[in-house]
Length: 463
Image (cartoon, rainbow, N blue to C red; front, side):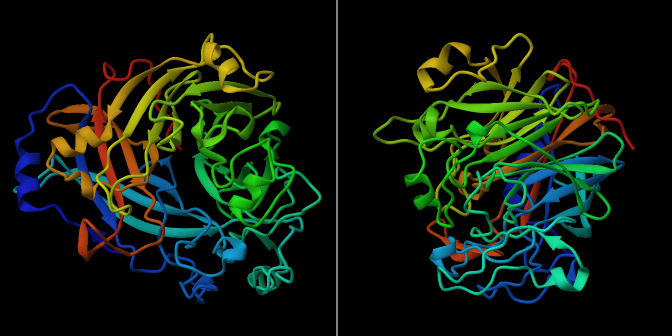
């Protein structure tokens, strides 16, 4: 897998001119090519839309630190940006998976533009599956082939699938037997043996074995998050429901407390009963990993626009600072890949200690007085453009965030924050800002910070 080095000389000069400080600072950038296959050759055959079933893309949907320089990267439901059939929202039988990466930070060499060098490598690709039978779409009602993964029989298991029709129509969307999975958030257990993954279809929160990819536990989310009327087409699903998550805007973010006792799941957009995509409050669900008990909190969105011209704000990720505070990645959809300059990509800090639960509360007006407070931690667009990176080249979908290892920068040890993009499985992009086309790799941006920048930060135990 080829690393990417695409800093222009002008950008390099600006980066080199940046003075060291005790503030959050960009210290490394690199990426991995999106032209190649991943490490699961058994899925390399073309999908229904002609894209290779193991194309290495979309990996910034979720990013988790696994200790000792290892990271897990999570693609979503597959390359459905490439058309296939609108009856299944252009989704295919792509098998969801996570990738194991090395993201090594090395000292800069003479002439390097940045204080550190990032050396990314892809090591393994692990398919997600269940020991219990899953429901798949047979395709007969919509005129497409059966959606059962071909590898099921060969490997004697039941793989999850990106196909949007893989569900039981007679059950709520949170039914754990549904085969459809759109992974968006990933975290590693403190012992390193398990991974927790969130999904947009259900929404779901599942635990998987890190080595085999086998599902080992399902966490039931509140019924109010489910839609009762499921449909393979997102718009049709929205029009048929007044309760539950908005289609394709389910549980986007996931955090885990340093002790592993608590999961924090964040919805991408407000629930339908809270106003849907035009509304200002997203729900955060806190899950006890032992008792499975849940609590809900309201997070106030900033980039909401107006009812007449909404900006469709989204929460893309959450990251635990400790057992009650977290960072939240709130962003627009503008930037590279969208054909527009990136405008709003910010990481906020929130504290749930003493916050009001909203389990029994519905509607934006009722959520407003109970919403948590937030403070800005990092304006990503401002930080990148200040280092000479044009807003038109900042990826539209900066979705994965993870703390990394401590490193020495300019003679002192600092903490690190990694940010990754979801490139929608598109190896290149041609748009208004790049009329001749441009490579669209899986990118990583590394920031360094001190304890004074993020008081209360508790590093995850290395395992």
